[in-house]
Image (tube, rainbow, N blue to C red; front, side):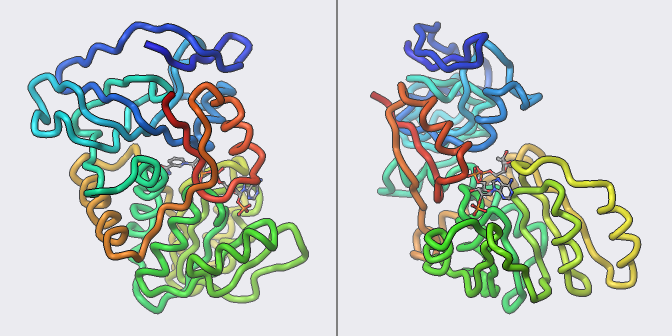
Amino acid sequence: MKAMIVEPSRELALAEVPEPAPGPGQALVEVEAIGVGYVDVMARRGDDAHFPGVGSVLGLEVVGRVRAASGVAEELVGKRVLALPDSGGYAERVAADADRLLPAPEGADPVEVVALGLNALVAEGALHRTGLAAGERVLVRGASGGIGVLATQIAHARGAEITAVTSSPEKAERLRTLGAAKVIDRTRADRPEDTYDVVVDTVAGPQVGEYLQLLRPNGRYVLCGGAGGVPGSEVFDLLLRDFHRSPTLLAFSLMSVAPAGRRRSWDRVVELFADGRLSAVLDTTFPLTQAATALRRVESGTSFGKVVLLQG
Ligand SMILES: NC(=O)c1ccc[n+]([C@@H]2O[C@H](COP(=O)([O-])OP(=O)(O)OC[C@H]3O[C@@H](n4cnc5c(N)ncnc54)[C@H](OP(=O)(O)O)[C@@H]3O)[C@@H](O)[C@H]2O)c1
């Protein structure tokens, strides 16, 4: 079958590779649409410790039909699923553990499903961990990103008041339509003036301390991405300094969530999607063979929502 592999130069190239053979507990998925995320940018560079490396195939999230399942999830054969393999999604077919398959919402387009995909699980899971309640104030960093646009909508659907941090007036306008009551343009002198019950941070980097100080008493700060790099160690000094306000600093990785928890989170996402309170936000689609261009778009920070690769 055809797949895009990472060459020793770290470029991507179309290659003929062996068809994946699903092992015990795995299913074979015929790929229709592939989600592209910042994590792929990092894997291609060699910055993701979990990616197998040169010669391997990127891709952690695909939507497609289950073609075969060896003794597990046989009820899903022929059905459309969101599959979350460890890698290998930039291909015609991919093998994934059966407990990494989630049923696609009835009648939904594969592009929409993958645009929700892993990002919706991260956004929903991260907000769920904070115990977000209706009426609370939430700040989202990286609000125009794949995870950010969904975190904004999910927090809004849960009755929170959202402030989105983004990087252009156009992005700001679109975030308002997704439910942000206020928008801060980080490229201007704008600085948040409010305090927040919850901060959802998909960026991290040296500004974490600055945002951490915006927490209200009993506030929760959830770090769920790192495109901006590692936070400085002053974060720990700040937590101790603000001890009397009981701040909570959480890290959230989808990798830590057990299959049953992932399924519960997906069901909550599908429910919001089905009743129109959550929409998939598609930035661009590219054919699989243009995966390098798709990655550049994500890396450039100009995308709004999800970049998706299509088979064919
Ligand atoms: N927790 C998990 O389980 C999990 C799973 C998958 C991915 N991730 C991680 O989550 C992060 C976000 O992923 P994504 O797919 O949403 O990425 P994305 O679509 O590339 O969005 C990231 C957004 O962050 C903002 N941004 C980028 N660089 C920045 C910088 N230097 N300073 C401030 N803001 C910056 C931009 O938004 P604005 O222009 O709106 O500011 C950008 O659109 C990545 O680090 C990824 O590896 C985590």
